[in-house]
Length: 352
Image: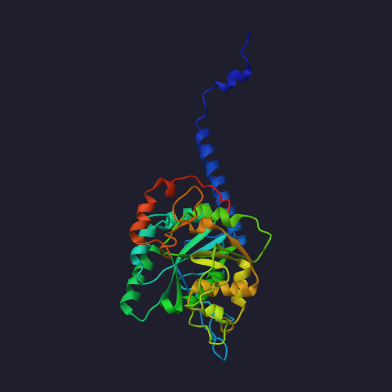
């Protein structure tokens, strides 16, 4: 019985020219694909760009009686001057931007954070941002102390994880810094939520991402761990205000200061208002709460944002009510990160 031609041809010795032809063909296809990809990338750039580019410094000018100052682009007092970047007029698209509020005395806290939930290298930070849809940056103002500014410049160059605000870094000016932060964040990032977080809390970014990703019926949302606090320490109270305030009654409901989030619509409203239309209280969290009350936004209370210990649903852990944040944060952050209940438990959505 004659052999099948099919088997016959399959068993023929391969031509010595075939490998060369295949290599040439592959090279041509690969080169053509690269050329087409390059053309498409130029003509249709993706809206999602690398979030870990150069550190950006946004200058916020406080309006005076005559109006705002000049600059590259001015809108209601905000002058956006983004340094060290070639796309200063573009906003990065993210689900949420987390601004970690820090100061010149908090170098140790930042180092501890970079050893725990916030990666210390560009690649690690980029992986975290891609996994969660959140961007993370330390937020700091400026000081007249040249030595401190020089040290900050070295840290910025080494880690490249800052947003620098053109406002004096002083405790008494925290409400002003907070407003400057939201304006700067809005100028840099096109986000669904803008999160203010302190540098002395232990955070689970994966769980924060789940919380922010939930569908909500309200476009104006103020999200945090809500409280009421005494008002008798407020220096802005006038003699003619209700006596009950002076006797120690409570403020309106507002979020604890260590971490809270504002939706994009709320931040857009803050950016649009004139700076001199805001009343500043001595406490930053009370100030934000007052603005939210005036804007009639939807409050979303979530106790997972102020957990005193790590649980299967805790998002932010700090020593409430003993400290506004973690007590001895430089050490406590490292200790918590070593606990499986903090760093290794699966992500579970909170019921709050």
